[in-house]
Length: 283
Image (cartoon, rainbow, N blue to C red; front, side):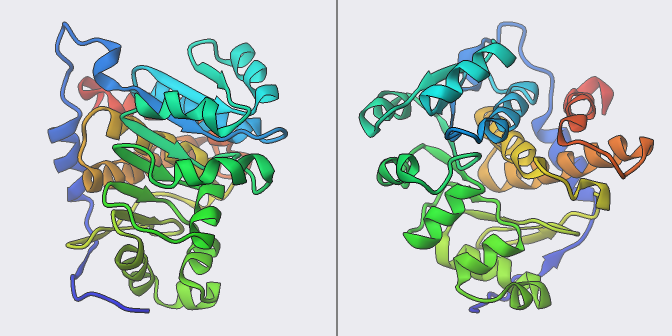
């Protein structure tokens, strides 16, 4: 793996600096169009939970207009569960283009699947969005069709990182700093290498999050993180800062949720502490 010489920063001070800068009170005349549109693409049949977690998190973390492009059978599920989301039925690639053209932030991957539906959409999704977040199945498609994007956040766990680097999980875990830098060098943008002590790297700096706990090793936590990143990008936080602040907020919310016990914690348990952490008067 090719590495850079930039040092790793392991400090909690970054969170305070980012929160002070980017979580200021909103102007009284703010409107939802200023914080979007955010488009999340995923949710093939049978995978509605992942896209719902990511999209609802984006809303709960401050995204304004939030749309979901999903398989036709999934759309009804989202409408019933969370009416604030604008669920759009996408049967083919031509249905997707109008949604992409107006989106400021595009999240690709939660529940996208690896089937025929995702396969026909991927060529359009690969370069989509002024700002882009690639998570879950979106990373699998990227590994098969590698290409960089300067304003993209990748959110791989070690297994996904290994596929993206064409190496073993053991190699990733033995030198996580080298792995995250190699991912950034190959794919551009900002990379979040998830795990204990998640790493965030761009081409200039690398930061390790000191917060988080083992109770967060549960289904859906990655979808929540993708939603937080998207929400911050939609609120005009720059890409590295959005990724770093999202990881820190996500981990801190997990620590608050774990006060009731690590075992049995659900990904959606982070919603309430996230709202608490995101509001300046409560920092």
